[in-house]
Each structure stands twice: as C-alpha cells, then as structure tokens.
Amino acid sequence: MIRWFTISLILSSAMLLAVSTAPGEQDESTGRDIPAALAPLEYLVGGWHGNAIPKNSSAQQFRGWPETHAWAWIFKGGKPVGLSVAFTGDKTFASGRLTHDAAHSLYQLEAKTTGKTPKIVALEGQFDARSKILTLETKDGDRALADKLRISIRPNGSFIRYTLLEERRSEGETIFHKAVETSLTRDGERLAGAGGGDGADRPKCIVTGGAATMTVSFKGATYPLCCTGCRDEFNDNPEKYIKKAALLAAAQTGKPKTAAPAKVGRFDDDFSDDVDKTPKTTTKKTMSPAKTATKTATESNAPAVKKAPAAKDAQATRAASLLRLGQTLEKNGNSKAALGYYKRVLKEYPDSSAAKTAALRAKALESD
Image (cartoon, rainbow, N blue to C red; front, side, top):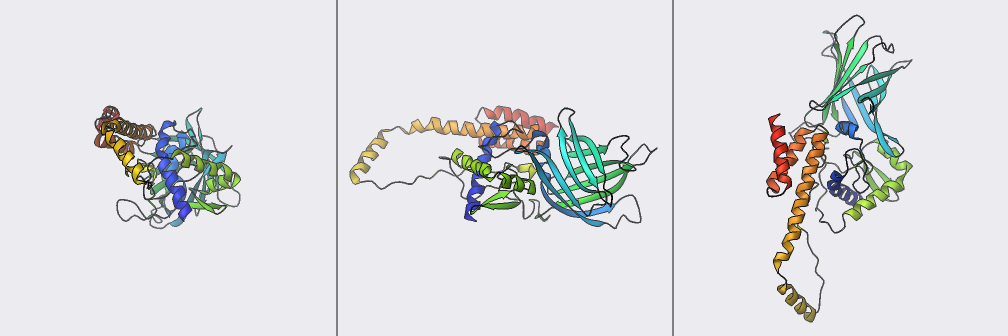
C-alpha cells in the first residue's frame, strides 16, 4: 500500500509537465501517451454496468436486460492505437475494436456479432466535440446485418455514465428508428451527490496516465493501471514502465510534494490538483554554535528582495502551465474543463502574462 501510494503520488504530481508535449505525443517524463483523436473517448476505458431497454416495441419498452461493457486500450509497438470493447449481455454485438483513420478523419468500429455464426460488421463515423457524441453507421451496401445500423455513444456531464443508442433502418426506409437504448454506469461509481461516486478519485495509470481502476504487482511493488490492455502491455515490458516511473520520480526531484495523493478526476477533470500549493518545508541540520553564528550573520546581510525574482518566475511558470492545460482541453473539445483552468489563471495569477490570453479564451467560451 505504501509503495502504491508513493508511485501514485509521483505519477499524479508529474502530470503538470504534460502540457509541454502536443496531444497524442509521448513524453516519458509525464506518463501521458494517448492518441489525440482518442483522447476525448478516454473516459470509456474501464468497466461499465447497466441495463438495455428495447425501443422498437411498445409492449417491451419497460422490460430489458442487464449488460456490461469493458473497454481497454489496444497497443501496437508499445503505443496505444485504439480501444477494444467486450459486451456481455448485448443482443447485437459480442466485441469490437475502435480506431481512428487519420487519412479520412473517421472513427471506425470493427464489431463481431453475437449468435452461433458471428459476423464482422464495420461501422464508421464522426465525433462531435460540442455534444461529446460519437456516431457510427454501417456502410451502404454492407449485408452483414439485414438492416442498416447506427449507434451513438453519449456520456453524461460528469462522464460516470454513458448511453449507447442503437438505431436501425430497413431497406427502402429513409429514416432510422430507435431499436435499443443501453444506459451504463462506470464500475465503482454511485450517483449520490453531484461530485460523483466512490471511484471518482483514483491514482494514474503507469502506462497511459489515465485514471487507474486496477493494479499489477512486479518484484514486490504495486503499480496502478487503467485497463486490461495496459495490464498486458505492462506484463510484456515491465522494465520499460518501471523506468518511466523512475523518470517521473527524477523529474520531481527538488519540487514540493503534496501530503496526500493528488485527485484524478474522470475525463472532465483529468489533470485536477496537478498544481501543488503546499509550501516547501526545509529540514535544518544541527551545526556548532560558531557555524550557526557565522551563518546567521551571513543571512542577515543578504537582502530578502533577492528571492523575489525566483518567486515571480515560479508564479509565471504555474500560470503558463494552467493556461496550456486549458488550451489542450479546449483543443480536444472539453470546453467546460478548459474554462475552469482559464478562470484559475485569472483568479490565482491575475498579474501574469498568461492572464491576458486566459481572459480572451474564457470570454470566448462563455459567449458560446
């Protein structure tokens, strides 16, 4: 437990440095390694449970069945390149692989159907950054299913629930009709209170830097992970990720540490509490009276104003870091979280050079 606490603290504190790397690029000193196109869907990683309700039959609309979904990262060459999903209880699909085709700017889901003779169904579509909805459809002429199929994935405001809507359009029809609506809640969460559930605060995954939901042990140490995909990647190359943890620790040498693990929000606040506000404490060594007198005399002659530039530079650095966090989140379509960081810059560092840019971006987002 103590070792996990230490690793979690190191990983959480170091996330502030991630803003110096473009979204989707890896920086081994930060632990973030998420493809930019898939970053808005990172909230899906982990396990979900819920119920599916048929919408195409008035007699059955109040009856349904339980479902569980398990999302995990897919790795290639040591880097996450997509998401896998396993459906339990779903009447249409058993599993799937979600990727992004950068050349055509399309998200693609290759899904395997249920039944005795499973088929592979290909769906593709777009992600709406404003509504946070991912919509995918089967291609025209695809005969893997009798009807043309459209599915949409929509999260709630706090990203601890999402709804998967399945719609169908028979041959000759021009519009889609609702078939099944599945509402799911993240494993470990409860809906009581506005702040989320029991699993709202988690350490960060040693592989991708996302919110951890599980752990893995290696040589007596325990490391946090976000999904089974990251677990398999860690087991394939544990030394790589232990080295990453060591780099994170080295990056934090001489920097103030918080007394408790930093909180990891869900997708909407993934960098929460990365800026440390705890004053740095200094451990004094015992010296002889003569040395103490000499040191005191020397310190008394040193003007206190010499420390001011360093403090001012530190504030400017923190303000710039918060600004870049907001810009990164805004670029990925997470305007609500971005606005929160812009307001933090204005509140905590109103005299910084970053405050001017933060004010402009905050005004633009609030006017939308």
